[in-house]
Image 1 (cartoon, helix red, strand yellow):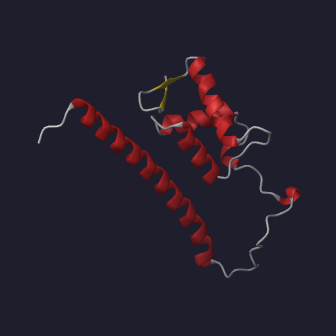
Image 2 (cartoon, rainbow, N blue to C red):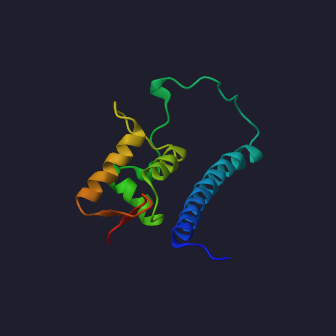
Image 3 (cartoon, rainbow, N blue to C red):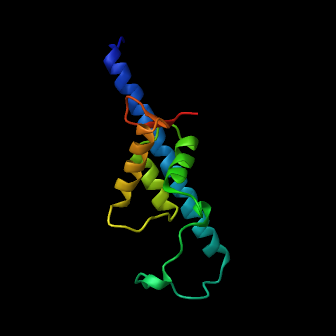
Length: 135
């Protein structure tokens, strides 16, 4: 069976998208397993509240990115996962508990930062909409 070049390109894009989704799913599974590992070994010393904690009791940003700018945080993920789209970076950051306060939606903040990085020549955008760090 012979496929034309556009069909081959579409199949390659589909594979790349599925690989990126699989990476996100694997990271999500790992995060859930870390949580479950705690409860599999603990005796449940307290009940888990159903309501969200008050603002003053909200967990702090993940320590993994303490002291880093949004650009640095985004760069960490683009370096580890070349070709990711802004939505992929946003999804992983949310899974890790990372957020920024402000009126702008978090997904827009991530995309805007990547756009600024592209404008400044730090990032290139591929034909599939994914981003790569220039190094």
